[in-house]
Length: 93
Image (cartoon, rainbow, N blue to C red; front, top):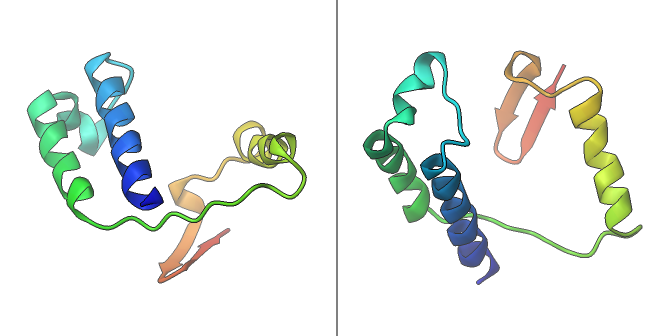
């Protein structure tokens, strides 16, 4: 149930951001600026099952924000650092 709810809410928020013009697309993804193309791109995401696992953070929400801030304000995780994505594991350089 949580997976379906999260998927619906996430995709609704993404579509809303697109309608408001809050998303920018460049290079190979420039065509996604068109609403019809973006809608077609989202369609398979609505049809597949999502896995969502959530539980309360051990040290509270502040610890979660501190954890994520390390990735947004220091060395970012970007595609060039991606080494492998296999099953349930992601490896970065």
